[in-house]
Figure: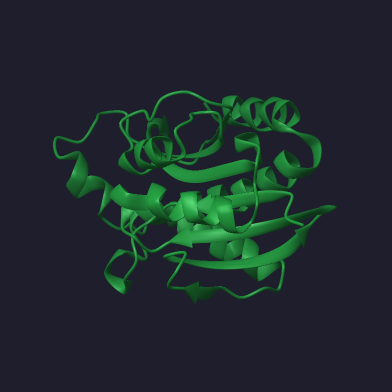
Length: 196
């Protein structure tokens, strides 16, 4: 029995591992480490996945290996495999250009916000009613080439902020699955505002 499916969005391959667009993978890697579980690749699911106990909830963690734009193809297979009937028990962890660097936000539903991975998940699941854990990578001035920016690595100066954000995101996932979205939003949105 799997209570929640947590999807980290990113691109496979070593050249993308440390990029801004792969924050979803980084958060899931950290969570898997804390849960003492290891990812394994499933060709049929087109994803790396593992399972563990997060608080009192059985969670499956998955990193689609389809490349960002086709993430939904893997997610729909994962939802079927883990028998997740309620989209509100799917949590998609992804980078977000519209949120300042270092902030973590929770969203219950809505559009893709210009994120191709989220749009793909919506398309394949045919619903927008999944949870999103959004990780801020935004700048005060939007970069002229968004693609180059999201596929670039974090700078040395940003590393400490990113490290804290990944830790915050892991903590937020624990609250999300055990205490619900409203509690997580109250806690982490307030904390983000204190940073503003």
